[in-house]
Length: 93
Image (cartoon, rainbow, N blue to C red; front, side, top):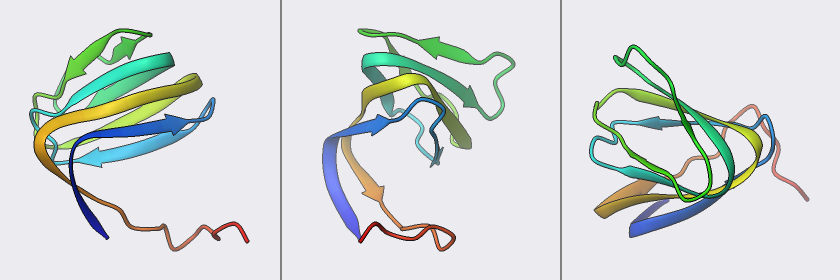
C-alpha cells in the first residue's frame, strides 16, 4: 500500500522500534514521549522529547526507538510512505 502524505502521525509503545529507509529531508517531530534515533553514517545518536524535531540528513537507514510510549510525526513535502506488514508478525484478529 502506498500513501502520499506530507505528515504521517505515528505512535510507538515503550521499547518499540521502527526502521525508516531512504528518507533524506524528512523531519521527525515528537508530540509526546521520547525517541532515540540512530541515523546510518552519523557518529552520534539523537534523543528527542516533546516539541523537538530532527531533520534526517542521510539517505540510509534510520532506527527509531521509543524510551516511553511516544506519539510523533514524519513530515516531508509530498513524501511517499510505503507500508508493508512484516511476514513474521500476525495481524490481530
